[in-house]
Length: 122
Image 1 (spheres, rainbow, N blue to C red):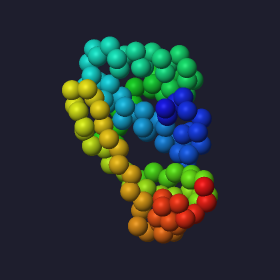
Image 2: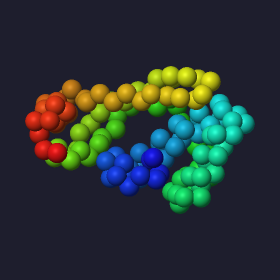
Image 3: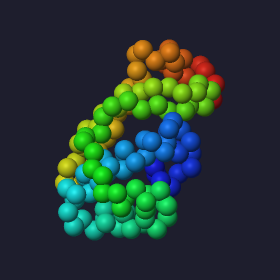
């Protein structure tokens, strides 16, 4: 979705900076999936459909585990900062769950809490 969904591209603040970092984390998982035809087919499909994926994939960059800070552009709120961390759900199937938690010190933290329950924008 990172490379094929225009809405997700809009939501991830600083997409052109974040996308290569996310891709480099994916490359780490790709290396662990040595020979898995499903992940190989995914790479082929993304290479065919996304110029950015194609360009950045050939850099062969590998990043440490997916964690840190990322901002999202949310309708009705604007830019909100989140801490994120990746958890292995099923290593055999190469599945990860990435958990996002709003940064407590983010000026939008309270507004985000109201947004989640439907009190803000939309």
